Amino acid sequence: MVGPGASSAPFPAATALSTERLENQHYPSSHIHHRPSASQALEEAAKPLSYVPGEPSVNLEPAEVYAFLIREFHTPVLDELYTRLWCVARKSGRSIYPLNRQRVKGRDIVLTEDPKLHLIWRHDRIYVKPIPVCLLNHDFWTIYLPPSAETTSSCKNAWQAGANDLTPEFDRSVAVGFLRSYAYLIQHRLDFILAREHHLIPIDIDWIRWSIFIAHFRNIEDDQVAVRYRYGQLRLTRLNWAVRIFQPRSAMTRFFYGIPHWATGLYLKQVIGPLIFAYASLSVVLSSMQVALTVPADALWFEKLGASGLQAMRRAFWIFSIITLLFSGAVWLLLLVPLSGIGWQLSWGFRNRGKGPIHRVVEP
Image (tube, one colour):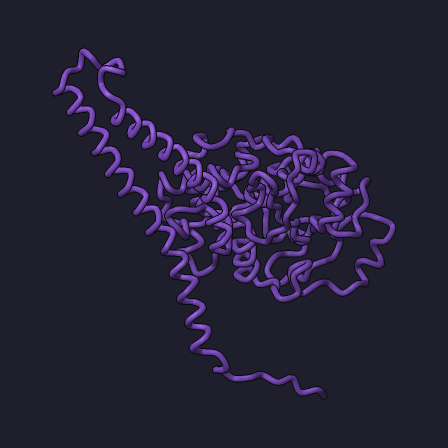
């Protein structure tokens, strides 16, 4: 088995799941290892790709490739929260359930191209990023993701260096950690079938080839991957609280790691239950206070309190009632904010109805 630091790629060329050759404009040809097989002559005759495998819009210029990799795998919020993630998750890159167990737990597998949502879950779904084809190509690893003598254990420094240099840099350990996550997501044939059904892996890969390929990532340790992948799957609701408490600078909002809903009605539906429970509880408490104040003192156990004690108790009940009313009013004001936003949107749409250019499709 080949480790990530033992050769130019973390897997042998013979096990690569993407066998396209790449045009080599920036590195000596001696650094590229091709898959030795009976079809090598046909591969040599085939025209090499001039773009990133699976991404025809990205050429093979190093700056373009590294910018593409950063877009695909950049997780700045989790990198910034790394030293505090132990508060919300178990620190182990192996803490990832296989796909079949995700389905047993009632979670839908939701595809996403957002790297920060990879392996993030909530009660009924888990977000998974499909494998980019380029990470299955041996030439791509050899040319653009070679082992570096100065490879850092944290990808955070790499992101910061990429932001300062003209040519962005990419930490190889991020890609290694991403593929290692799939070693835990797809462990059985049923996981492989689910992955193909959800288009997480290329459709032309079979179970045997996949098993041989992914075995090279299964025994990689946490200190060989980027800091994000030293944790496994993460719960979205707990990450939201981590963002609210620790306020990472790279977060897009101060309250959510990821926006859980995109409609105001869903937020209202989520909070209406707790509000009804709080309203019912306060109603019971206030009713009990009213009954206690109307019943004569000699019929209760308040004989020892005296007139001054009963007066103090009535004053406390009155203050609590006023506070409850003020709190209820504040809650209704907060509910009016999203409702007023909906009303403003409807009025804006009504005022601007019929405006704007009309684009007509002209048939050739």
